[in-house]
Amino acid sequence: MNTADLYDERGDALASVSLQFQSLGGRSHFSGPVRTIRCFQDNALVKSTLGSPGNGAVLVVDGGGSLGTALMGDMIAESAVANGGVVINGAIRDRLAIAELDLGVKALGSNPRKSRKAGAGEVDVDVVIDGVTFRPGATVWCDPDGILVEP
Image 1 (cartoon, rainbow, N blue to C red):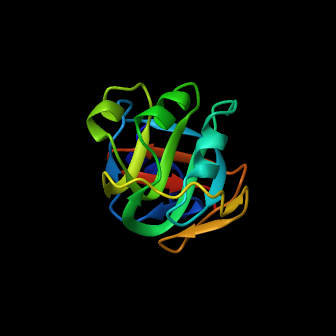
Image 2 (image 1 turned 90 degrees about the horizontal axis):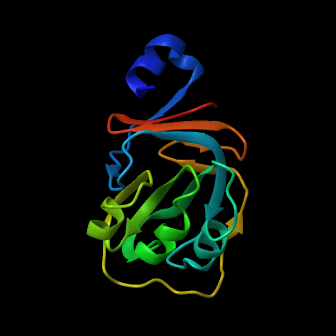
């Protein structure tokens, strides 16, 4: 379902992210239950989470809006194809390869610089992006128009 139609149907029962994320994956529309990671310029938790069964979940990564390093590249993205998709409040890399994958990806942009891999961060915690709270287990919907989530 398109986010515009969903918003018309449910209105303020949904939170809308106004921050302008780019649609970078090969799948334009994706949705599912939220899983979350909060990390900053360190993608070890992103890699381990996307490498495990996601059962159709959408991983929402709060990278603090940093474009300084990429939190996901093509190899990590390939491991996520069986899952619902990824929303990254930060950067990715290998955007041309990721655009070819059957994976929904929303991110702020791209940077070829690798991130640290120390494992710093938190998994399955509430994260706030652009004033919108993403709670693990809530449903998120993404398409080229934007991102909606159950508050």
